[in-house]
Image (tube, rainbow, N blue to C red):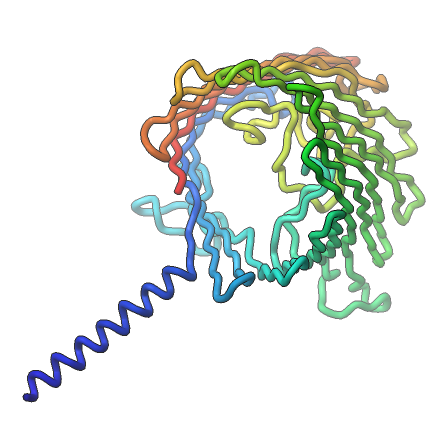
Length: 412
């Protein structure tokens, strides 16, 4: 009898454990990717052979996203990366999988937020992605809040805490004033077109205030079999020194599926130049997650970024958001071709010329991209790409920059 009771208790415990595990599995979903890449790059630092900047290296990343759903319309989202680093750079020791004390490149959390939907209202709070337009002019992975009303006209309000000013106090006397972002996006979508209008501003109460603004509109529509995306952005605002921020940029992209296997596309670029007494912007400062580049078409989109942070809107940009002032005019063409179901081929050719001639900055140039991606087996791809960027500069000689990269990746 004692053995029977023990067996019954064990069975009850096991049944409860299995039920709890099943319940936990229903609440949890996992997704992500694992990749290893091989790189060979030259001349991207200054487009000059006189500088020894050739790089040849391997890197890797293990990315995972976990979504916990404790109730209908309620989610907790967590995305993190393991061992996102170059091989042999000192961040790994021993067997190559253990982090070195004091380093922070072995584990990174870039999403950790609450997502709640009630009727037509959605609220997200925490560390999350915030983008406006086609995710170039405003492209942030920020800590803050988004409030969305999903009606025929969708309204999205956003707030992010960019900087606490070095302390949790917010005092002019202590010099700990905060920097915050505020934005609004109003959109409408029908069966034939969609349009979004947006506005963003940075509020900086510090003595060295930097307060840019962004106003833009994005449209998507079809003209017969041609799909068109067009965006116009205008930057404004000023800083504590009274220097104005400025920048007008426009991009239009038209693509057409010629068949199930072949897609052709063209795009048009314009970005105004500016005077030396102004600061030209191409991206909103503090909102730069590098999730969109127009100069990087193919299986490695955004990874190569041959023209720097200003991309096609200002190839002379030297830091995220701030441009040289040269601007750009031009455009390009691209193609995607699938000769067989498991193989995609990509090609892109683009030409740009400066809107404003500035000594030491670029005058004109072209970009060539070719890439291929092969489905090795289910959820496993191998890809390769080549980039050639040839830029002429005003007042100095320049040499072409090249990149050759290969990647093995699984997704789940």
